[in-house]
Length: 130
Image (cartoon, rainbow, N blue to C red; front, side, top):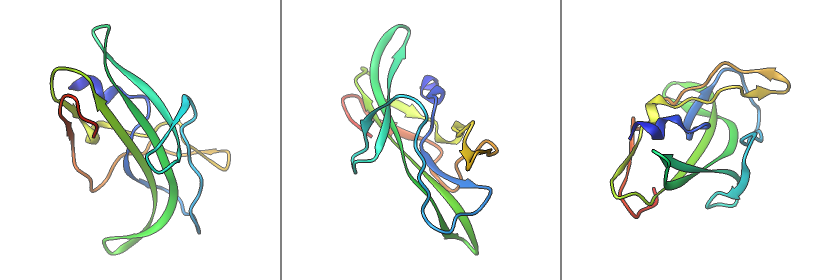
């Protein structure tokens, strides 16, 4: 479902340019009105297609940290998401079309961030949460 790719913030595992010695705090900048399954602050967005509410999504982060990725050590930004499908059809969330934009690190803007080494899409059946 192409409309799923238009969610303001994304969730997936993303690579940051820069470095962090320990886990750094990172949260969505708007809509903080929910919590993740593990209790992190989350933003909740209604999913609306052709004027009809078809579900909702939650977006959160467990922060940025250093990790081994292949043969390299990189800074990773975790972004999680949960999609509730209340429509009559399966939803497809196009992960590979997502990006984090307007992120700031210690007052400095970061380049737009995209997922890496992840599934290119997530299927959520009707009446399910994925």
